[in-house]
Amino acid sequence: MADVDMRGLVDAMTGRELSIVAPHKAAQNAPVRLEVRNLGRRGAFSGVSLTVCAGDVVGIAGLVGSGRTEVLRAVFGADEPDTGEVLIDGNPTRFRSPRHAVRRGVGLLPEDRKNQGLLLNRALRENVSLATLGQFTRWGVLSPRREERAVRGLMGALRIVARGTGQAVVTLSGGNQQKVVLARWLARRCDILLIDEPTRGVDIGAKEEIYRLIQGLAEGGAAVLVVSSELKELFALCSRVLVMRSGRLVGEFGGASLREENVVEAMLLEGTEHGIATVAAG
Image (tube, rainbow, N blue to C red):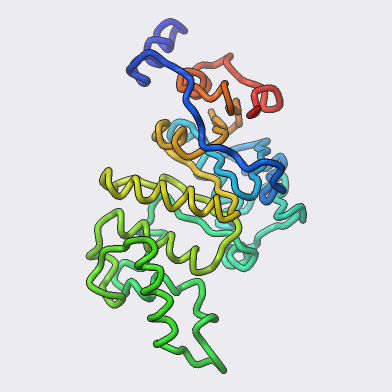
């Protein structure tokens, strides 16, 4: 497609005169909690390097098929990378499985929460405590009272609307289902959260609450990496936005460079690569 046509598409996607967007403020002098070096998976993505500090929210933008979801899955151990490495708090780590990642304090909210993130026909209580059953057991015996108390506390904190902890997750709204997955990782006290499409299929009110929760997690010291198809969502949440195209990172924007026009052009236009080192947040 001609460059002029693609630029017209950029304007159509943004739908307004473009201006600087103020990102979520990044943590100052915070330690790097998650580092990815030259990560690659054949047929999906290659040469991906990024960092996320404690207390920061970093976004990944890109069209469907750009490799953004696959990067999260590889970091989490759901798919095995062919090249590169993942470092947690400066220590090289290769997660053999998602279970290994969870043990190291990494949680994933998948894009397809209904099929990959939830046990839809099971109780809310079971879905929340799934990753933390050890906290509610002694000598191998589960304490329903302790489990119930913990889950009820999380329901209140996240404003999960349900009849009780025994309600089947399949009967909850999309926003409340997403909060159930967030509650699971809150219960686990994850230091690193990988979030794929945080508000897909939820109403506006639930979106605002989920944004508040994600920012609260970052303020509590978590490192958060977010993939989203909604640019306004990334601008609202993130101090930096990375852009993927055709399986590669082609841009990084932060501070004054975090503009809708810049991000959309990097997503769509060949020859508009923005050096990761030179366009970083300032």
